[in-house]
Length: 78
Image (cartoon, rainbow, N blue to C red; front, side):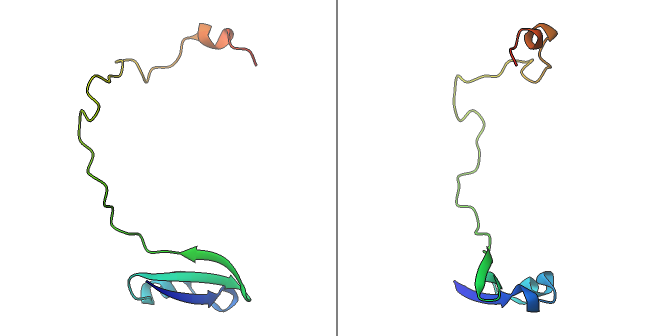
């Protein structure tokens, strides 16, 4: 991975700069000689795709997304 450094004071357009960078290049933004930000390319995910029923036996109630009843809120301490 290559690294490119730009001083934010002399950076005309961040979007144009990013478009011109070669793939797999880190962009270091500086304020004078002090680094202030680093933009890194997003790597393709190597995660296994999600599968339904990954955890057999775990279930959600049909009303899991319903509002809580009023008596729940009236018994809560602040």
